[in-house]
Length: 234
Image (cartoon, rainbow, N blue to C red; front, side, top):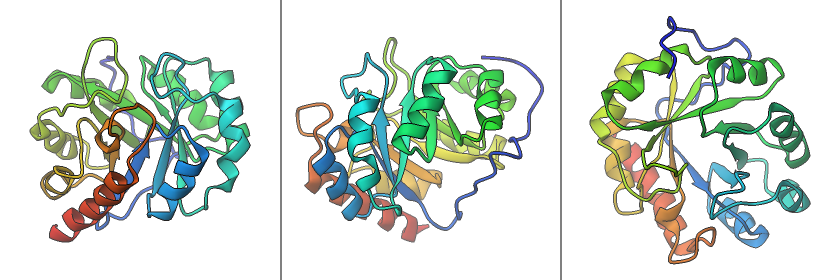
């Protein structure tokens, strides 16, 4: 990660979520009917995975067929890994993405370029230890997603990382929006919300039964309810 001096979030990327409310993102959605149903259950964000190596990969052309059927109260987030900027921009326009989530080795300059082109960027950081937080200062993104680390994987890992590191993030970078991922489930998300105070909690495998990309709507419902209960506990 870069060791440049601290960079303030770009003026073009100034969205701030109310600190009194934690929101839920259901990631790795692959089916139109499930996307609509998850939105109706109250998900704040739907994550669409455009990384070809992912088990939850959704081709942009497929997403564009139904993406605009999703109610505007549920925002679409596109996940990319080391993608060409032109591909990210084209996909964001064709699918109607509210955010792009960069889950690879993208540089601060790459993020800044997309922000200056009008995109809202979530920079994902895979957390190994305390040192994983050091390079965040160089990124211009208002929104930072912390995820567990697993070699060769980018999201959907299914296990947590020490939440004390997420709390350390909020202390070191109070001006940033924390999106918390990594092993969240309907059973542990309320504890995560109450203990870490993230702006958004992000789940993929934690609301699936067996097949990646196919969600259990019952687990989704419970995850959203538990997210709200954890926020109330705050």
